[in-house]
Image 1 (tube, rainbow, N blue to C red):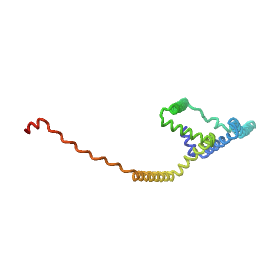
Image 2: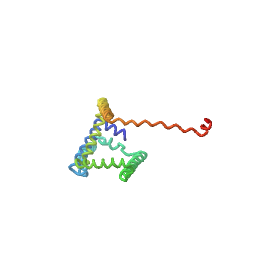
Image 3: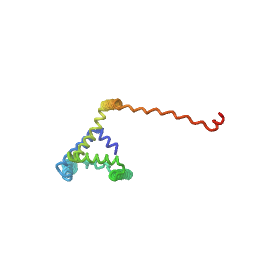
Image 4: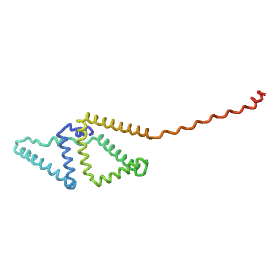
Length: 214
């Protein structure tokens, strides 16, 4: 499934990717004006308006014995889109693991498992309130779909130029950082030298040494 998704994202089959991309964008844009049920029913009706006449035409040819009973959509009917037992188990395991990980992370963030991570989560939620006031979820979904089908292809086409731009930006940021550090070190007052410690007084001679001296 991952390989099929990558084929769609990188436009390796232009016709298939174009159909999927156009269908997704039109469907999501239609949900702005209509309900999901209405959009789904209209899409199915439009599809059947295209498939039903052709099926009746082939059936008429079969009745007139001009067609040996060939079904126009037999290739689509024969296509096996079901999952094997192993693929089903792997998919269910991935979904369960993802849900479990999300619940664990939410518990850790909401119940302050880590103060730093919880503060970041609060800031993110606060920023999302502004995003929600400016736009809605469908706009973000449409933007994500357009970005999913455009950004990887753009990166693949302009990979060398983008890497060169990233290196230039990193070099500029590094120069600014070094300049700020040098200004900080030049402005920072030099540390006050500690006073020299006085030499310790000589130890008094012991009684035995005094007796020998006598």
